[in-house]
Amino acid sequence: MPRSPKTPIHILIVHGEAASAVASVMQAARHTVKTAAHLDEAARWMGREPFDLVIAPTGYGDLGPLAQAAQRHGVPLWAIGTHEALNSLGPESVAIDEFLEYPVVELALRRRLDLYQERRDFYRRQTQLENLLRENASQDPLTRLPNRHFAMQHLQLQWQLFRRKSIPFCCVLCDLDDFKRSNDDHGQRFGDKILRAVAHVFKSKLRAADLVCRYDGQQFFILGSDTEASGARQLAERLRMCLTHLDLPKEINLTASFSIVQSDSSFSSPDHMLKEAEDALAEAKQYGPNQVVSSAQSVAQQSL
Image (tube, rainbow, N blue to C red; front, side):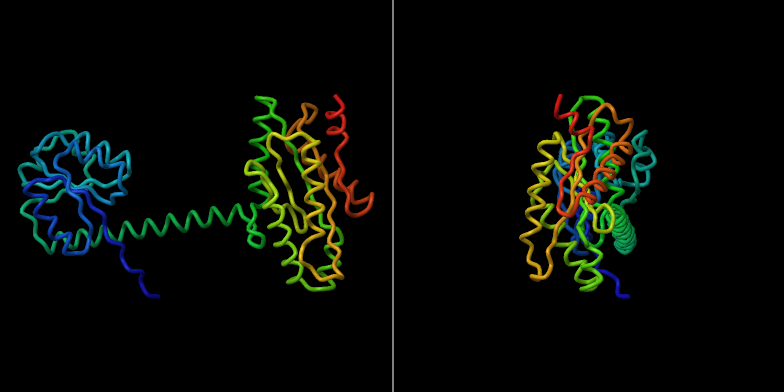
C-alpha cells in the first residue's frame, strides 16, 4: 500500500541566533516557518494559527509563558541552545518536548523533523479513524440518519431538561405501512431506496432543534424539542402528506402510521415514555394504515 505524502510542518520560531540557524534548514525541507520577534509575541500568536511546532532559543528570557501557551494549544515546544544553556534551564524545562543543542548538525535536525512528521501524521490519521468509528457507531449506514442508540442518548438529555426546567418535548414514532410487502414485491434494493427517500423528506421538514433517526427497520423516531402534542401532531400530519408526493412508481401507495407522546410527570422515565409511544403506534396500526394517534397521556395533557 503506497504511503500518503507527508504534510509540511507549520513551525513558529522565536528570533535568535540559534533559532535562525535552523529556520533555513526547515525551509529547505519545504516546511513553513513563521518568526516571532520575542517570546511574548510567540505566546500571543499561539492561538491565532494552527502551528504544529514551536522552537524557542534559550537565554532570551523566561520560557515559562510560552511553554504554558504551547501546552494549552497542544503544540510541542522545542528549546534550542548551547549545552550549558540547556542544562541551566529552570522549572519550565518539564514542559519542553525536545532539546536541540547548538550548533545544530543539519542531518540530525532533518532526521528529528522527519520523525516528528511521521508521528504527527500517524496520530492525525489515528484521530480521523477514531472520529469515523464514533460517527459510524451513531449513524445508520443506509439512510445516514442518526441511529437508535444516538437518539436514545438525546432522549435522555431531553428528559433531564424536562425534569429540571419543565420544558416540554414530544416523541413521534413512524412506521411505514405494508413496507414488507413492497420489499417482497420489488426487492430489497427498491425498499432501501424508499427508506433513503423518506429519511431525506423527514430531515428536510424538521427544525434544526429537532431530531429524526432510523429507529428500527421501516420505523423512524422524531424527537421534537420544546414541543407540545398539538405541534407534534401538526408535524406528523405534514410528514404523512409529504409521503404521498414521493417520486415512486404508480403502483406504490406509500403511507405511514404515526404515534405521538408528550413529556409528562406521570412518566417514570424516558423508557416509560417510549413504551407509551410504541403502544400508541400499535394502536394506530390497528385503526388502519395512514393514521396519526396521540397517546392517552398526551390527550389528557392537552385537555388541562
